[in-house]
Image (cartoon, rainbow, N blue to C red):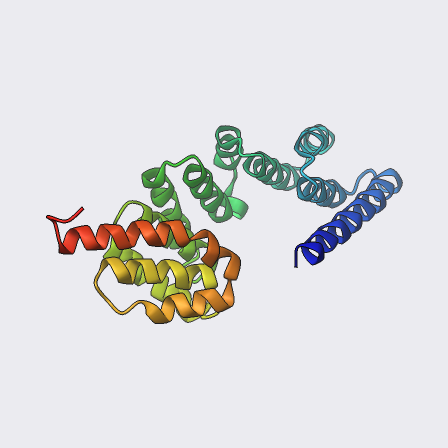
Length: 227
């Protein structure tokens, strides 16, 4: 299993490196193709080459400064570079300056940036703003629900997880987290974990410590005198 994963990662890396080569050639042949810069930055992020991706997009911002829509997309790309590099302050600064075309996507990324830095209250505020613009977007629903879970608002978290699971019943992470919410609320939770284990075994495995902590919390609530 480990060898297969390693082989898969190596193949992905080779594909990404080949794409870098092709996109560099494309930029050389078509220097006015802004999308090629954006795509190349995305591939560099996949390769964890954050400094190169940042440098590329900064160069592109100078080249295309007379094209406002292109500039906005490049700022969005730069925000994604900083987000991937976990430089959340810089990411938020990039997403904050987006105009109407990318505003909803920007709000969601600001929410995820605050979430990454552990500020779940601010993350929730931006996620709800994003949701107002795209109420049926699964990614936005998941961020809203995750932050409600993080701040301990279980009843509302359940509502948003249920909406998400109506759209994506095969979302293993959402099923696992919905199970955590159900456990805290004293509801039946076994089916959620069963689905999560099948749909997203990696997330299920990583969530075992959270599951143990929640179980301990629930037991403490039911039997306050026990430790």
